[in-house]
Structure formats: structure tokens, C-alpha cells
Amino acid sequence: MNHLQESIAELKEIIEKYDNIVFFGGAGVSTESGIPDFRSVDGLYHQQYDYPPETILSHSFYRSNPKEFYRFYRNKMLFPHASPNAAHRKLAELEQRGKLGAVITQNIDGLHQAAGSKIVLELHGSVLRNYCENCGKFHDLQYIMDSSDVPACAECGGPIKPDVVLYEEGLDPNTLNAAVNYIRNADVLIIGGTSLAVYPAAGLIDYFQGEKLVVINKAPTPRDKYADLLIQGPIGEVFSQV
Image 1 (spheres, rainbow, N blue to C red):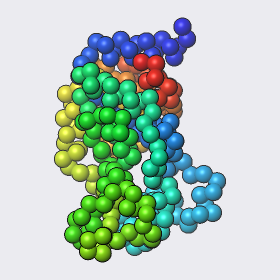
Image 2 (image 1 turned 180 degrees about the vertical axis):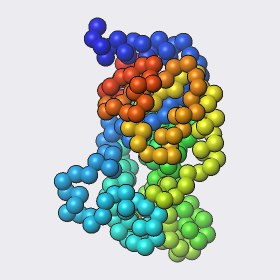
Image 3 (image 1 turned 90 degrees about the vertical axis):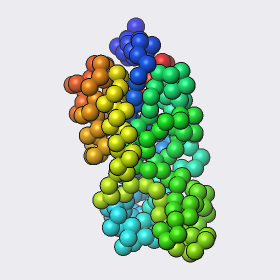
Image 4 (image 1 turned 120 degrees about the horizontal axis):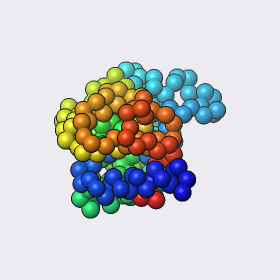
């Protein structure tokens, strides 16, 4: 049995032993579904855009240059054909078995719900929800995909904003409070597919005071040294063996 297999066996034991598990995840959970981390700027990027992704995805840029915002957003943030991978499916199954209390995600792709998870706290919102800034009418992802330039409301013609938390915007306080409560009361916290670099989301980990902290990520994270179990590998691959 190699080291990875030993770690996966240990993860299985933890999951069997505890019934109050919370999962906290990031972009690495969706990369195996073919959704790239938008921060990984590719070679073509600088030929297509004059600004770094963090600038384009900021509230002030959205306000001052909505057309360019939407050009980037459609090209880099929307993956309507992506489907859940082994990690999403396993988490949904653990919830159904009464093992997992909640999924707390930094992702905006809706894949946890597509896999069947019911309690999903979306810290950064979702591309599946879009609202008119004038009348509040809801528009789905397809409406945004089918529109050009800055999408206008079907009802009143007002501008539509995706229900995602942009840079410079605060997280939803209700979602944040719920996440804190789940983490604070969990016996096991599994952190997966996140470098824990984005605040305030990453700071939620500080509320954990349970028994076992598990970290599953390809690259090192600031929490590795505190983990009771550290697995360095792709999370879908790990969960497919649990």
C-alpha cells in the first residue's frame, strides 16, 4: 500500500466514524469537471484582455466597463456543459447518508447542486442566478449566454447583474453566518481543492474546533501543518476511491 492509498484508507475511516462532517471547497473541486481556475492566466490571455482577471472581476470595473466585464465573464466564467465529477458526487452521497452536514463552496458553478447536494452555502454566489438591477427580475444562465454585450432585462430593459460576489463586494452576511455555524459545530472539517488564499472566505477555517481537520489539495496550503490528515492530490481522484 503506497502513501496515497494509506491516506485514502484513513479518510475512509474518519468518514465512517463521524456523522457531523462539513466540507469547505474551492476551484480545485471543479477543475476536474473542466472548469479552469480563472486565476490561471494562459498564454492567450494577454492578447485578449488589457487587464488582469481580478481587475475585470471587480465591482468598480463592472460599473465603469460592463461591456468588457461581460466579454470576459462569458468567455472565462461560464461553462454550461460542465458536469459534476467524483468529488461532487461523493459529497452528495455523504449528505444522503447523513454523514455530511453542509458543503461550503467558493465556486459559482452550481455543480454541487447538480450532483444532488441539498445544503450548499455559496460564499461567492452563482452564475446560474442573474438579476435585473432595476426591477429585480430573475434571469437564468441561458439568458446571459444568448445575450450580447450587456444583457438587458426582458421585463424592463434594465441592466442585469450576475449574482456573484465581485472583488470589492462583501459576502452575503446570512451565508457567512450559516457557514460559521456549520464549521464551528462540525466534528470533522474537510478542506478540498482550495489554496485558502481568498479572504474573507479562507478565514472561516479559524472557527473550526472539532476533532479532525482534513486537507485535500494538489498544492500546499497555509493549513497543511494543522491537518490531522493531509492528502496531496486531485480531489476527484481521491474521492473516487472513498
